[in-house]
Image 1 (cartoon, rainbow, N blue to C red):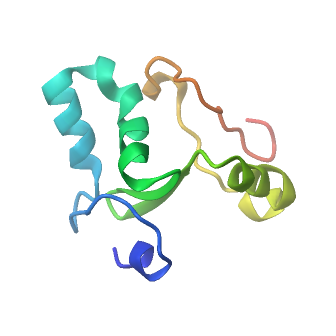
Image 2: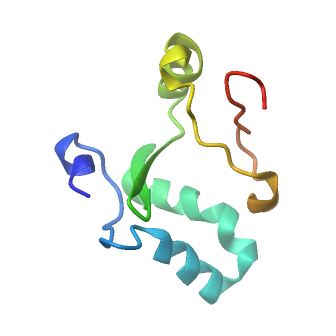
Length: 106
């Protein structure tokens, strides 16, 4: 849980076991599932265009910075072939972002 601090990556404080997952549950509990598309945009307002978010002990780096997106998806695509895929059923309501596929198109 220290890595984001070591590399200068901002983000919400994380718990050892749940990471930041509790944040999702709190939002759904308080505002309903309809509020889930607004979780990352709200965190972006607080932490900037690139920040870390823990799902348990797994760190996701979230960005809306076009230069970083270009670097990952085009310039260094070969170094990022194991990008996490989000099942469509988990994305409410398909959000308005990029849907990721891996290097074999699935």
